[in-house]
Length: 253
Image 1 (cartoon, helix red, strand yellow):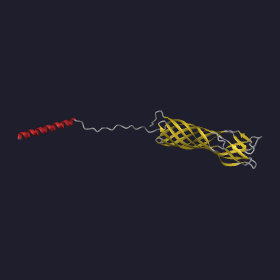
Image 2 (tube, rainbow, N blue to C red):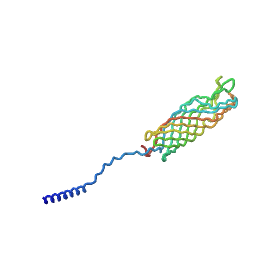
Image 3 (cartoon, rainbow, N blue to C red):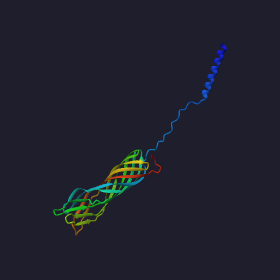
Image 4 (cartoon, rainbow, N blue to C red):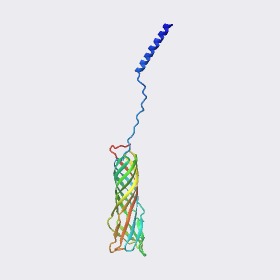
């Protein structure tokens, strides 16, 4: 019985030794590694861009004349459809974006007058339509990934028809030719959203303050020698547009 006990004990020690040695040869259990998740680079506004725009514009001015004392304040037109395009360049650093942008828009004819009674016997209608609007401005904004909130400031130019003055009773009219391009300063702002790696859409408001202008009626006609002055003229615009951004490998999503 004692021999059997010793034999059993020796066998147990040998079995434990073999199990320990085998366990030492087995590498520790490694937990499975989760597959890596692709994180796209943040959207970047850096690059050149170009695109179309359309919207509406309306102008406002004060109108006076020296002969009959006509004085109209805040003469408004009925507004007009505008359409054209823009091109520019953005540079993004951090959450800030700086750039420069040029716009050109054609203006649909409105025949919108500045009208008023110039004398007891007749009325006078003064018409001067804008034909095109061009602007050049710096842009500065803050971005939240694919959203850009920006302002702009710069200058602009407006091309217009000759000034036409009409007697609304007799139908007589004259056209005063002058420098038909006016210039001024521009401020505005908007919101732009990049809905694809190279495409964005925007909505924008701009205010273009123009220089005052004076027109003198030539001799030999209706209201000869009268001088008309348009003071504090301005053009306001609301536009929607789209841009294609040329990234050339700059980060996108």
